[in-house]
Image (tube, rainbow, N blue to C red; front, side):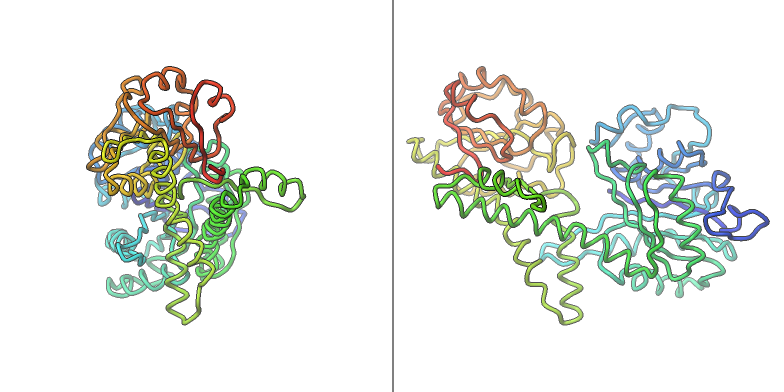
Length: 464
């Protein structure tokens, strides 16, 4: 995600007669927006504000990223950004590696930094703190710059992390700076839910600042923008959005382990249940990946622990989804042994590596623990993903540059439902297999058709 900073200067720079008037603000396009962190969220946000008529300063610490953006190229792995990066020389578009150069020109600040978890599954807020300190160090006295955190955090983080820094630097809330929270909801690889098509919520202790930000964000997105009151409401809204999805996915993943033991296909059950008007259909898989769903629940779990309240359901759901790669590894290992694949010689090919279809992002991908578990069983693992550079695979995983080069494997696992993975020449791959085993880890393949070709098909949630 990198980190974004969209800086929008004085509130009254947007308002007629030098006065803030909520949704009557009329001069937003006179404001300058700075974006620090030109990643999956930052670059589309910068482009969105530029398209809306704002002057934009984009900042990224990576010289490679800056160079590519200056050349009008897309440095992210999201193909939806490929053709929308402004070309060299376009007006109101400034890209640099220096926040010190950009910040003085800007008027409002959006900070979108990574909020990962540590090895012991605790929230890591070091990026939020470091980015905030960098921003506040460049704020001019008397400018009343608005700084907005967009990273996913638990309720209370924005104030608890930033207010001590603001006080330490001698800045005054309401005179030098204002802080707010507006969670990013951008969905990489989903053209229907980009930064310009998603609803936004804004939390801020100052309602006038909240109204001004509603006006600003309304120029970015066509969907609803709403002031929801205090910071903590907006912070909590973001984190529970992903907690809810994690719980729903955990339910179908658990069912995908129960029903095969009953000689029932989980997909048949879900299809039957979906005939009821209020049943929400989810699909089981090899695991949950990305920078949100596998991470955000731990922020809520930690905050609940801080106030002495158990988060049993959230914790249990996370445990189910976290264990799916290991479960799948056990199932496919049994399939190979039952097919008389010699112990110590088994080879598995993963189709797809990134955490979601059509995106070249390997963060928290379930393919990694799946591969690690197989390697721990002395099973060789290769991976083919047309969206992932070969250098991004971990040690021990053999990068397959071209699917036509894959040969001698005993089992293929569809790990990511890229279009390219679904549409490979299955007949050709079959002729190069040592053992014709196929495992659909996403339940998207036509298994009957593949069976007719000669594949021995299996799938998550399907009885063996």
